[in-house]
Image (tube, rainbow, N blue to C red; front, side, top):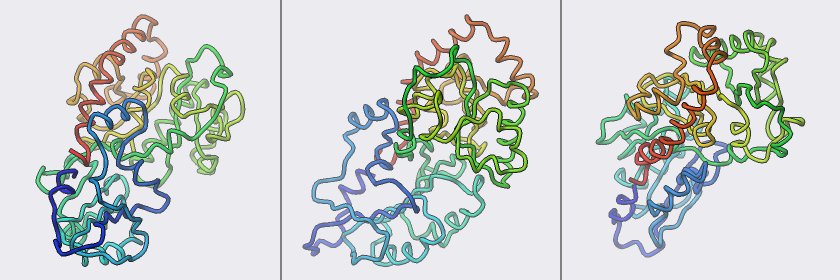
Length: 345
């Protein structure tokens, strides 16, 4: 995208500053967070190496309403909901197609109500489309980006204090903000969590209290620790990553189980050496076989949740430390590898 911004000349007669109109979904964080994948220091280092930033003289403008624009400007639409149709129509009608980009963080497999943004009527308005769904990308118009490269850092900064107040030994499991809908993948997440709760009482769940209103989550109450940053002591932390740092294992259940869908849910525990128990992309091992064979625990490889729980409970200290060493050896390479796929390269 940097090359597009630098190379596209547009209307050479335009005398006013050229503008980049950015339209984000409701509640989206600022442009700087979305485009600089700065969730952890690892990503900040990549940011510096890549020299990320807007070309000199390009003015960033919030496109939440129709604003005068023209052939010399750019339009970027990030993860819109259907209420953005009119604004998309306005900006793509006034700004040339070759200067319009669409960023789809989630995909229609996970969220049926977002299918409209994959309709040809919408896609045809943009020169390039970036998506977290690998199967959707052709390397010409459609490009793959790991979901966590879209993620802003306000989620990782939600919370708390007093890390030392956590119970010891730090061997509980953790689930943060499970999203409960009628969709199959999220129903599967609900089932997996419920099975863990039934088999292991030291399993800890964080998230909005509304999740307990679901009829199938009543058994979770004994394991529920609160919503960040309002969780009571001893479950209050300064940063979200400190939560993961306090647990041996982090249960990672992606929003969707499709090839190439890699979100911050996996990146965060890797960053702090909490061994992920992973349910997500079927092709996860292709990225770094060593990391996903000897470090991350692939939950899909077990015949049942009970078998997985039994494996975790019987895992020796030596085997656990071996997985940690593997993660420590390979996590930076994983971040570097997947960070290459971003809107700036």
